[in-house]
Image 1 (cartoon, helix red, strand yellow):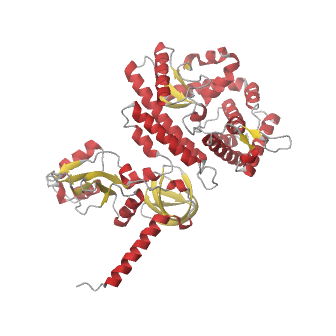
Image 2 (tube, rainbow, N blue to C red):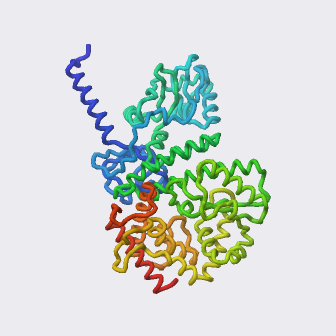
Image 3 (cartoon, rainbow, N blue to C red):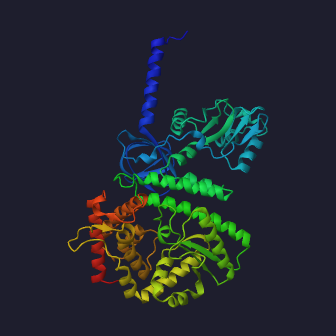
Length: 532
């Protein structure tokens, strides 16, 4: 008979309940793509990957106390005890585990050999298979770890897979929260979780990485799911979900502890890119192989990763040679994007009409008359999402050459976008957050970059590149990058509120806005005094 008394068991249960409550309240899981940074404060456990903190590196299985920026050297999953952590609330979720399941579980019958199970895993590109009974109940799980162990031990691969698989299955019901599932996996030190229905039948398998994708503050799982879409209705549904997520995320964008707004806008841009790639691919398959190499590029807000929701489309085609094929391709793609809910571009800068032959691009810009600088801006902000990227690179070289030959006009055109300040350097009573405030920084940065041939897909990257070229000081670089952060936050927030114009009194970050616009004014003054 056990020496444990009922009182001891009750105390143990209370301690365990207390632990679970602490875990739910204080531990978050964070997924970090390679070379991304997040500010944390608290104890961090590296579940997967490699991170850098204070110039030291930490890998899977290690833990540390942090206060400040943590950089993922490779794809990483972190568990963070956020009792004193600085984390946006969007890192947390209570979504049920069935939402995390990626697809139908891969199963094999009980008599399957190790070799056959490994073949199935390879063919289906999965890291595990579930051994099931004839009536569909899970009996055991065979993982890639089990396979490696079997091969290393010299086990006969013709033995039944149950010989080396785990029969101590960790299972949860499909309505269990993702966080509860994470707790169970962490406590049991397993990477695969069996999800069952109320009757105990197999519903699916999830991994720690699956949960990380669901709990990350940007919807990476949406990008993954889009690649399996088979109908326009599914695409529409995904776009609606992304729009709803973006509106929720925008509520935290003005929080000083929130991640840089580019994390949010870049995620939306990635998703819009993926939708467009799917549509372009469908149309290309219908029309047949293109007669010449071509590239589809997005530009405007999406080109520099400032897209917040599905807004006006700005895109174009650059091809090796002119051909009617590209006119048909562009028209069909735009038609389908409109059907999916993408709004029409009010300026008509879309691939059905905006098409260039890379060999005749210079002529096309010269023929455009007063629109030449607009076209150069669009092309220089272009970001390849489909086809031959080198064609876009060559187009940008042409634009750089023309801009450098006409630098005075290019720069003066960009400086027309003045920061919305009064003569006393106060924020104007009303202003447009994107068209005036944000544009007053992004337009001259783009113009100088275009004249000098500076590379960089985002505005902050271009600002740093200008400092590297000694166009601006390191001090001004820091001020302009901080200004961009503030101006993009306010622009995103205003867009989420449906406000095309703001009154100075309703902007939450008044002091930060004023400092940002003054930094932009300093940049304008420098360019007017010392043209590049």
